[in-house]
Image: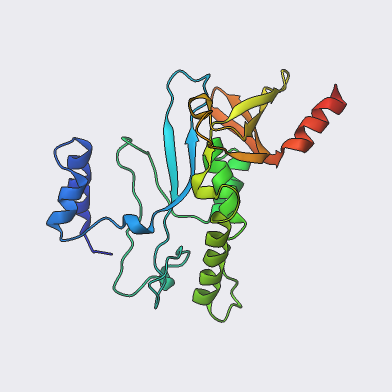
Length: 238
């Protein structure tokens, strides 16, 4: 972790966005290197085939260090950051990549999305749903918050490395398997990697679906459900 004064960070950010400066060259000038070794692969998502502009996006986890340890960890509390480290408050980049930025627990983002106060796209909602099951704010009664956070992160990392394939090797190309004409709500299956990877042995998430209402204001009313239960309910309704 290095300390960079705000106006220099903003100057470099604009220069990099305008292609006047390469990120790695800026880091080299600060005698720093990107900490890519601690980027943890956490699924790859591919835009559905019915969308005209398609993307492939590799998702990662990155954990800030806790006080008194060099192990990866997510920081929920400024008091847990090493004294010599200052994590800057995230800011907008003027709308080039995003319009606002904020650090909040995963459960808080999910709560706001369910209330339709913010927009989360299905991949964001799904991955935050997983993270929220492991990472919780330590209780006020916790004797050692650092140890509690370390335990939570260890459980999350163990989960990500589990499964066949492990989560870092899963490819997901969402596809609509059910659509309610009246409500406009769709059920997105996550089990396939997409037509481009049909012969590559890649697979996604077989047993869950994302329920979502795609309106003119973006995805709304997101929910994670069992694929079996959703199809059973649809058959019973018919």
